[in-house]
Length: 618
Image 1 (cartoon, one colour):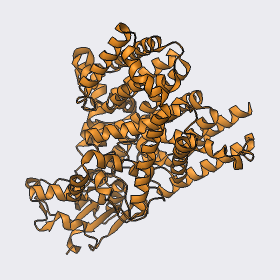
Image 2 (cartoon, rainbow, N blue to C red; image 1 turned 45 degrees about the vertical axis):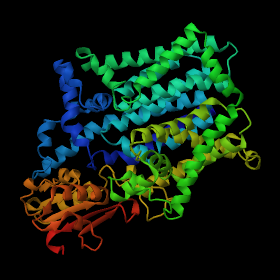
Image 3 (cartoon, rainbow, N blue to C red; image 1 turned 90 degrees about the horizontal axis):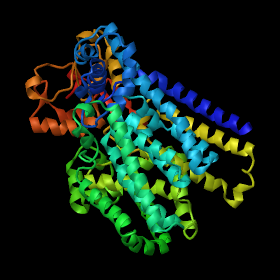
Image 4 (tube, rainbow, N blue to C red; image 1 turned 180 degrees about the horizontal axis):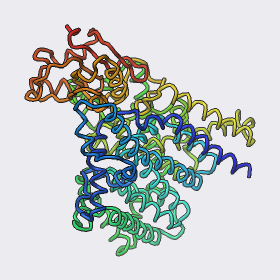
């Protein structure tokens, strides 16, 4: 009973804290890309459902169906036509118009946020099954109070749903492998199906799950022999594919009228398009060997590796540690080898020079841990590294559970996929890895408390509860330190002059608009902003275009942000754009410009949002 009370108390505390910090942000935020969903895609999906025009449930290439289905629940409370509200984005607005826009976003964001909170008990249940209740409790604190995960959960964005679906599908599959219980296989397939119709990157799990079949055989062995093991494993893998396909078919009505969309979501998607032929060839060869040759070829390949499995495990940990070590050394030496920051920004000349020296895939692999480690709260980052070090070095010669090894392997596999596709994994692009990191950090905490010098002090329930309270306190401090710009969270471990992700989702736009709204005669002021979110929350006329034929206005104020500098300057130079007939776009970002309002996101001067008066600029 006491253990159950502790667990329930953790959930109540985590959810209450999350709501306290996040609830107000549901309407007091103006983000990038959200207008595509709020004014268009979410209403389109539910209009198509209501009118039974199934083909119109195909919204975009993401495809974003899971997000639209969840977010659209809030349409019941929306007053007015979202499309007409969208027409107000760049136009002068009344206070009533602004309130209508705020209410629209609140209504559509709230179901998404509640969905993410509802996933926390499922995380706990699966982690407990896999690794025990103590690790599950610590994981829930790290996951539920992660600033980055809270930030993305408050948005209408496919990643707001994806960050829970992919890790949960992975955990469920690992529990299936551990317990040999097909119920978890069905759950994994269902969650994978929902993830696939949310964002195509979920296809990476098909490849990873296929690899896990061989890893389980190599690391844990099978008394039944290779033939029986692989027959069952491949049959179950086929069942997983079937369940995910059925889930797609049931929840994505456009597939009913155009079955090819099922292929577009899976093997023809951007994440799978280059590799699906290789994957299917391997799958067919493995199946043929298993059912025709009794797994002789697979045994010839896997059995020698089984005898050297510690070398394989050691190599994975060594690669992870080497990549993390490079990130720390390069960061704390002042980016001695190359600057990480351009890798995650709009392409620049500096990045092209780096690529010429190292090559794009290698650059992405070397850089991927940079935004990852420094957007974890310090305690989680340190415990994450501790878990990898202890598992990879101190336990090198001992048996270790396959699930723990696979969590780290998934992170490396994800980075390898990003490198192969040429996509730099910004914090948002690797959002699905933060729950995985939280679990590994919780494992690191377990390693720490299991040390001989500490174990005697933390063996009781009371002492364990004290540790959880400390975790809770440091997590709250991290939320306080970045409030309300949770998605832009940067750890204090990162030097102040460095930035993680300048391609942020609009942090500071809302606050800039509120400053402008407080100016005398604000409704008659004309503003140019490099982020459309400013225009959406501003009461007057506003533009974010850089098309010369649409810049016939003389602007009174300019709003610029570090996150849009590279892109805006590049586009302005491409289109030979000047504002107010004479102002070079690049000059707006000069540090010497006088400004009327400035916001440094996360207290970092390099991550700024500025409001400048046109007649004060040189």
